[in-house]
Image (tube, rainbow, N blue to C red; front, side):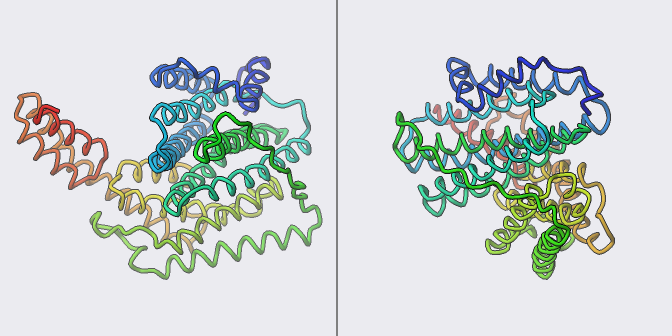
Length: 412
């Protein structure tokens, strides 16, 4: 990939690392409106896209969609914690702005490489991952059960973003780019968790975060026997959770209506999340090259299960567009089942995608009517059409339009 693009100035990359790892990105966000921050992020993203063609461009799009999904999940988690801990809205707005700025910086430094060899890059990722584990556990300890569940959802979305972001870098022949990209976003994630949950939610704003101990990094299993056991362990865990999932016939079937789509039970969702964590740890332990070579099937199965769990949860929560977007992103990355044995899982995912597409098309008719009626100041009729559109294809944006029309009709 690196040979296909025009290099970005190394000075940008050095500055980016300083901003991300020393907190200066937060300072630069001061005074920026959300619109300005979004504009800067979009400019950085479009600048990256200009350097790509074909599959490389699509991988970057997949990564950015995954970041959007993560930022939405994290915003929901932060808002819940903020509400429960009586945080000011200004704090919540600043928190969202930090994530946008951090992603902008990552994109500006997309093509730069560290002055380190592959082994040093892997060691840095090990250290960053260990530090994140500590920060994540400390964050969970400060939260209620409901808040923990929201943060766990955000963390799963972040893991998906991190992995897809790494895959957007796999064209580097040195192998350093995907490892270093993961290091950068992992350090940012640990920093964000500590600053919001460790300082703000825990009521320690203004005091420096205590440095966390850095455990010894995991060793890359050079011994073939160690590698074989790691592969077997991952395969066993993935196969086990897959069998438990498909055994639940009420979940895995061809869907004909949204009412049939039920969220994955919490215990199964936890096992799917654990399998995703195991796949992440395996990649960290053996390196992305070996993981893609020896465990591509298991990785695809985990990704499919995560996509299924996420989509069913979103639909149950009344957010069909987010479910549709995440499934489309997954299918672009995994166009087909890795083998015949797992084709049913892909078929079930496709049935949800098809259902979303059909319902969205049916809802569109009512949305167009609603917009026309609203323009004609026929508020009551417009609300009814929006309600029908929402009933057919649950979309938070439509729910917001209904609320807005009702508020306006009441003079609120």
